[in-house]
Length: 202
Length: 202
Image (cartoon, rainbow over all chains, first blue to last red; front, side, top):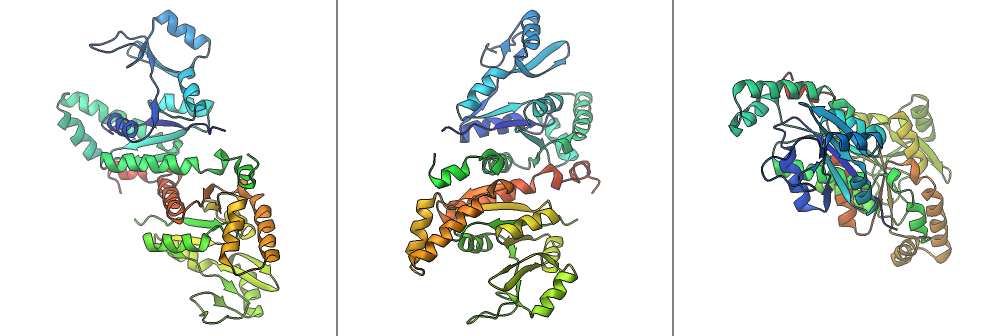
């Protein structure tokens, strides 16, 4: 009997290192990373089914109406959502799945699927977040301040998450998340067959 | 501000390797292991305050009456219990504390202290448990069968625990428990000050 995979829902302010850590997790263990659907147009080399599922407004609305999305939200006039099928299929195959989504979407998913593991990734402190955003060198001071303001807003939701991981270094934060995955896989609530396994019945 | 230590409550049938794993945990990380109070007489080289706190029946009753015990139970006419002060003092000092106690006591502690982490340790299966008990060579077949019967009874309570750890090898089970400790220390419910820390307020 194949054990169902875990659903990891990772959020965190921009500058928290989410993207890099998700890449590390993929490299270290067999995680599937969910691909979002979006109504926005592809940019540069972005490919359908690799970076996003690119959909028309009508197609996206159809997905909402048919409850094909685990969560969705609108940003700057474009819609983004998590297709349900990809996630549930991978989990049924025993694969752990990662969703890297923002706070509102994360809480929507948790409501639908309480066994999902909500992880909030934070930089050690505000000062360090400012430093990291500045060091990227891609944005002006005003844009950085907006991101810091947004980070503070998102921090208001941290207590609705299951775990908080402080990203001091990428390596340590990746290891921390792997410990969470290992611990969660040992939860009795996820091992209801343990008595039968012990008795040799299955 | 010192973070409060975690309380680990480890149970498991005899032959599950509890004792050895607790020794390993102590050797690897800074855990305090709670010492039980008992009314039974010291055996061999057993020392008061090291192996047990040896108490008279009157003293033990006094501890019960004054709610000085986190849990207690009677076996073969002797009483055994966990003194509360040692546990709470160590935790307040930021130390993780291990209680190695049987199922009924473990569930009593969890009721009193819901933040306690209940870990059920099991051998991979019944057959292996039989093999381990036989290989000890210290008991006859009847005694071994009684232990196996008791293990099956205890397994009925596994779903009331938080985690189940399968002891395939001592090293792996020890690492598994350390992952649980690490993950639990990242629970948002145990990090209520995270927002203030992030903002640099504390």
